[in-house]
Length: 274
Image 1: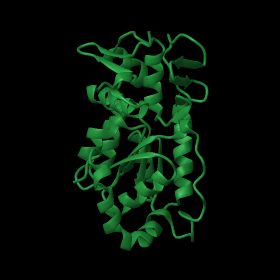
Image 2 (image 1 turned 120 degrees about the vertical axis):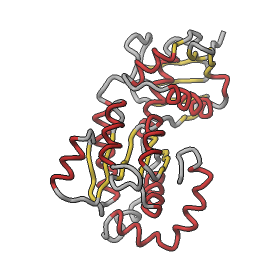
Image 3 (image 1 turned 180 degrees about the horizontal axis):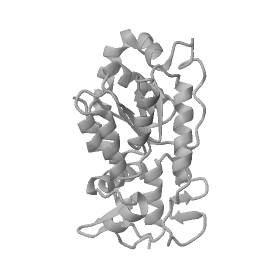
Image 4 (image 1 turned 60 degrees about the vertical axis):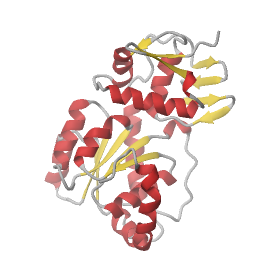
């Protein structure tokens, strides 16, 4: 069983074992139109449109193909193969692609559990083409669905549409002070374009990573409690692991752990430049 944590180290194995069946799997998953998945060059994406996507897919071949396609479009991908792992890792994602045919749990029940926990966008992937199955997926809390086989262009269009709707909700803390651009030493955060730069170089961040960083940067040197972070960034979805995972990812992207300071038992703060 594959977990999101070990995806990076296990990826070469996936690609090696999957190579001989790649073309067949791509046609089965993304449709049979010649070149639909690979002929067009990957468009240049705005850094604000880079998301962390959790792929929940029981088929090893489909999981590898889908992961490769999403990464070619500039996204960060974690991949798991079971409902149990999906429930353990969904809080670290900006969006979940959820196959309904999982080896351990009913995909619809997994979708309901994710929706009860928070507002993370969910797109279900299914080979069940009946109207009833699609209605059940939407009633379980899915934001959208795609039916196998599907084209990568269709999938990307649906991802974009779902994430546009998700971005309509306010992203920055309501009490954040300052204008559209926050500058803290070499760190620059543009709230309008939702882009981050470090010493003039772009830093790719996910939607929630941007929200967390903007919140911390709105009061540099001031400790913000975990509870406040969860409420302002994740709404009603509470998890210690969610905050810790995003803080760890931001530290790595900003170039070191010193940028975000942990105040044990309280919360986090952006380091003071004084």
